[in-house]
Image (cartoon, rainbow, N blue to C red; front, side, top):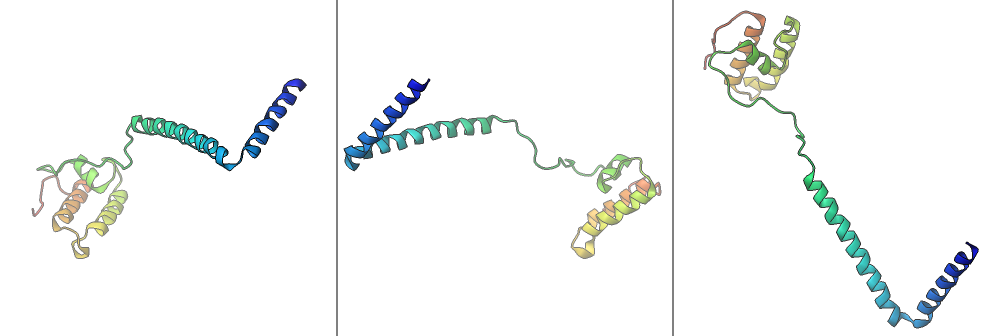
Length: 137
């Protein structure tokens, strides 16, 4: 082992002394070649990383929202979706959810009259006050 270490340092000494004595004009191509080799290796790994990035499965980054419009006659399920609660929930939670959604969509604050009527209808359905569609729209 000691012979191998000595031979390695001897080789390194010869290599460095040759570069030192050769001068800048002949050492520059060696440095340029090493830079090109490093760029090629980095490019190869960059391409492999990009291919792995593109091959990964698509994961939704945002919450999936309900797709579709309102039904002709509002059901308890649709009312729960509008208010953002479960279909079987206590009245306190329904009132709290109604207040939260109405603050965000109130017509006086720039919201839609249509959405406000649907939110109120959803609250009535969830509280059991109305089973038919009494929306003004």
